[in-house]
Picture 1 (cartoon, rainbow, N blue to C red):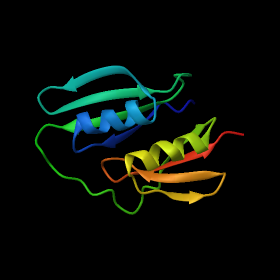
Picture 2: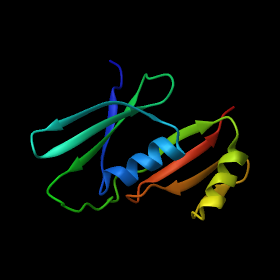
Picture 3: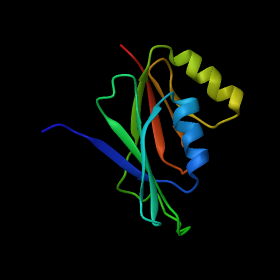
Picture 4: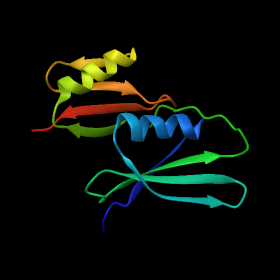
Length: 117
């Protein structure tokens, strides 16, 4: 068995895409719809072995992140450069110096960014 993707619901598809593609550097690899109900956008990193599915429901419903979900984690070759980018954007972050930071995506999901080994 191989893990395929993780789906998260988003409030604003354009804002979420800007975060996941513009900031995190993921690439949109597929887009589809479920009738008039929802738009699904699949994102992947360079390896393309795993995907994140952003689901935007067209009816405008709101979601709470909830207490069961933890976070999505990404590795980067230069954590200091990411921290500088986050600070330039004026975003809040929590840091374990030299190891990782946590930021929040536009929907309130925790995103962990780890220094690659």
